[in-house]
Length: 231
Length: 231
DNA sequence: CTGTTTTGACTGACTGGCCAGTTAGTTCAG
DNA sequence: CTGAACTAACTGGCCAGTCAGTCAAAACAG
Image (cartoon, rainbow over all chains, first blue to last red; front, side):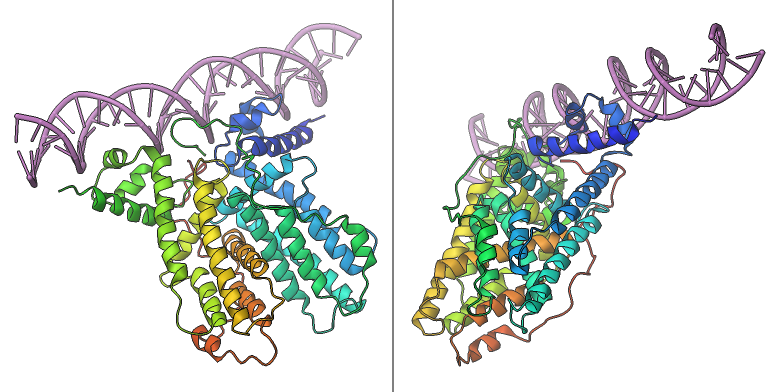
C-alpha cells in the first residue's frame, strides 16, 4: 500500500535536520530533499509548495511539543513546574537542538509575514501557558504557593521570559542555562515561607550557574556566498 | 563638496523605511533605493554590498539607541527606570515603529548566521543592561530598593523580559503594553515598604492594561505572491 | 494464471523570474 | 578637464516550481 505517510514523515524529519544545518532563511527545497533519498520533485509531489510544506512542518512540530509539555515527572506541583521549564528551555541533549532553536527563532520572526504561521505559534503559546497556569493552580491548592498568587499572571510571565531566553540566546549568544535558572529562582521565590521542596532539588539536578555570553559556535553550515543569504 | 555623508544617511533612513514596509527577509536593494531619489547602483556605489549595508545600518541604529537610553527624565531613580522601560518597549508613537520592531526581530534571528550582526546586537544588550544596572544601583542608594537587591541580576531579568516581549509581540501578536506593564509591576514590587513613588505614577501616565492578543494588523505591506518570500 | 491497463510514487532535466552585483557611460562641480 | 557621484542597462547565478517521462505494483479481463 501507499508509502505516502512514511515519506511525508520522512520529509518532516528531513526538514528538521535541514533547518538545523542551513537555518530557515537560506533553506532550499533541494536542501530538504538532500536529507532524504528522494528528489526535490518528490517534495513538490507531496506538498503544495514551500509555504505549504512549512505550515505542515509547524503542525508536525506542534504535535510533538504538545506531547512533551504534558509529560510530567512524579512530584509536587512546583517540582513539575520546574521540570517543565527545564524541559522546554534548552534541551541541549544533542546540540543540534540548539541549532534548531535558532532556526525556530527565524520562523517566529516570519510569523507576521506568512499565512498560517502565527496561528500555529499561538497554539504553542496557548498550550504552554495553560499548562503552566494549571500547575500553578495545583501548587496553590497544595499550599506551596500563596492564595494570592495569580496563575494566569505567572503563566504570562513565564511565557514572556521563555521567549526572551530563546531570543537572547540566538541574538547575542547569551547562556540559556543561566537565564533558565534565574527564571526557576523566580518560580521558587513564590514558595510560601518554610516550604522545603526537596522534590524540586531532586528533579532539578545540580544548579549549573555557568557564566554566560560566549559560545560563538554560530549555526550556519553554509559558508557565506558572496552576497546575501537567500530564502 | 561631497554629498557623501548626506546621501549615506539618506540611505540609512531609506533602509529603515524599507524594512518597515517589506520586512528583512524579502527586502531587496531596489526596495531601499526606491525609498530614495537615487538608483540601486548608487547604493552599490556607497556600500560594499548588501551585507556591508546592513552592518552599517545596525551601527547607525545602535547610535540612536545609545542616545535614547541615557536620556532620562527628572525624577527618582525608579521613576527613571520605569520611564526607560516605557521608552524602550513599544514607542508606538507612529505605528511604523511596530513594523520596525518586527523587522528587527528578523535581524536578531539572523545574528547567528551573519558576520558582524551579533557584535552590534551585543552592544545594544550591554548598553541597556548597564543603564538598567546603574539605575538600580541609584535606586538602592536612594533607599528605594533594599540593599540586598542585585543590580546585575535585575538588569539581566529586565533584558530577557524585554526581548521576550518583542518576540511574543511578533510571533503571536501579544500586546506589548500589557507585557510592559507587567514588567513595570515587577520593578515596582522591589520597592521597600511604604515607598510612595509619586514620581513614577507621574511619569508613567495612566495604566493601560488593555486586553492582549488580537490586533492582527499583520506587518507585511507585500500582498503574498504565490510561492514564498525570497531573500 | 497470464497478459494488459491503470495508477501512485517518483525522477532528471528544464524554465522563468528574480535579484545582487557590474559596467560603460553621463553629469556636473570645482 | 578631472574625478566624484551617479544612472540605465545588463549579466550571471540561483532556486521554486513544472513536465514528460519511468517503474513497480495493483486492478482487471479473459
